[in-house]
Length: 428
Image (cartoon, rainbow, N blue to C red):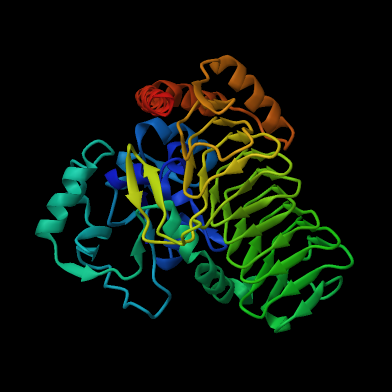
């Protein structure tokens, strides 16, 4: 089956992570949403419709995808899949016949659409919203099952169950070593350690509540504890850390301290002690020694988070922080419950809690919010940081970052004005 992933307008509510990547690249469980879509529909040929801003970077990161290739899209029947969709477990929802056009709906929103070339004649990234509305009205509807993710905390909240599901679905095909295993508390068959991973002495894996998955080339240093369900990504180093249930660490991370129910997209550094909980952290993020986030209000109330220019009630009492790519936090930062920080944010310690919303390309300096307009300097730093993990700041990626600096200027101005007004009220 030909499968094409797409983004609808609601992807804007998945900031700051989706400022720099399409929704289907987000992690949940042991895989990205896109990998789950392809598995669900047994995809053969694969494509994607993404925002023009992300097209070059997406094509670079996913060379197997035909990105915004309209000739490929219209070459035959295709299943269009919403990048925000978290598919149901196999057997939980009958898979519709893919022989005739239909739309799979969740609460009136399109999770997927089975389409023929004639229905795709005017479909492009710029006309997609209108096409979705037309297909929803004209085509037979079926229940899609699963969840259409609207906010990042939903991925964090479902991560533990998705790790269990992914481990069960992929377990039979996963390579598994039988030597140099950690001490296991719980069922031994719920531990998957890739033969290319390294497990030092005095490591404990607790599989009582779910699977522990350690991917290729990962290193688990002595005195680490891995509490399932959790997934340690390829090349990631766990350095005497407590990795608690519901945690997914993407590729090439360096992790110490304590992490609970968090998703780290990859290439992030939290080398030292400190707590990270109920959080979603982007790529190339660095958390300094002693930096911690709160994931529970003192009054145990529901947490509210700034998203896409408004404050949203999560409906949850356990919500940590959401940090965009290339954000850096200095020594001993105290990150408040429900904090959102955009891409290239710079968080510096104040001795108290930091602001709960820091826009992209902004800094917290001596407790005050400031714009960081040295784009060339930020690109030099990004190039240095990425080279330390053997990666390059490509021309496409640098162009995306520079475009985002311009595109997020209005949000920065609004945030700076709001901060000045709050300061004036405090002085008054």
